[in-house]
Length: 232
Length: 232
Image 1 (cartoon, helix red, strand yellow):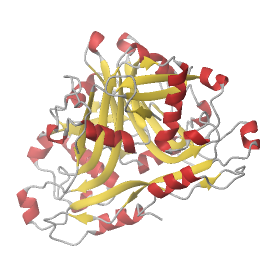
Image 2: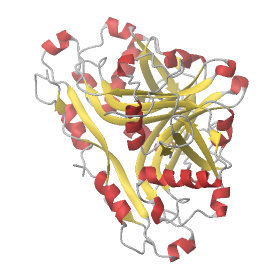
Image 3: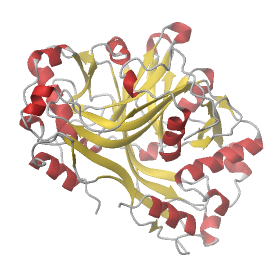
Image 4: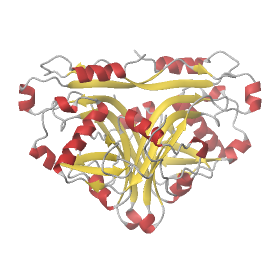
């Protein structure tokens, strides 16, 4: 599929060393992961000196392919009191998005693997201070999980905005790895005749469950999302 | 459910500061996450001094609740040439396991959330050198994704074992967060009468897909796993 977006520009930090056959320096592959992921894992370094260590937390994200950062903007949010978000703007963080597509079940333990699409983004986050961009970013966090939903909600209040940190990460320094297809076994193991294959995996939605105090029918945006993620 | 395992012993590093109502200092909750997760996210710090930054990669894991490390052992593996695994034994790493159970769709963007079960494990990995433990760990990596499968595979070869690094992380310094249930909305928003609820999510398996060179019917271990992960 042709695209006018620039290709990924991996630095030495994001150049995939192991499994380079699975690295696709392709902005369309990054966008595919960003379009389908519902959460990301944010890695930050906390502590100083000998106490410095990584912390990895699952978190929601928003994506604006036309955002003001190079390569587009990935938005993170959290409480203004969050330790990991407070540490983030001072240093490089890593955001990893993973879509697990299947278990690759080979004839040997050694060749077991997974089919997946995974993106690793490195960068120093920008604290978003512009009120309009903050509001848009928080809308995009909702849009990421249920497209069309943000427009159906009431506006953010000043109190809510004041309680929320918003960070933007450029989608410039990124690498994508994709594995798909059959196991790759040793010829002797294939000749021995055992089964091998893939157990496909998919994240699916059940029926929307109204809250105990839900006073209205399930809205269209939620019904559409449930249908898009329905088992098939 | 009564358990004879020791409770989690969070250090200041793993004490949950934000969202402490969602932290359950409960070894049974950690085991629930370990039992159901198919991948984890490994965070390491790479580089030195000002170049030090976190890298987060999805990876397989194995779990031995009775392993030799305090709290049981979480096993990681990789190529002996892997950058992140080479860096790991010298310093603290973070392994995060996340099960996404649902999208929490509130009446305001602010109260949107997710239902999830998530574990964060910190520790300095031990390089596993004992041949018997290495073989057991590599079996557990297969057992994690398809219980019963390791016993059906041929033995690891010496060449495969020599090419594989195995690390063990104690499951001692860990924290677990769980969110479940309805959105929690502002009373004014509830009174306004809009819908709110949860879109439940689940990772499901499709039918096993035999490789092009598969020479046998789908084995029992794989059929059982597909059935356990079938949409329902």
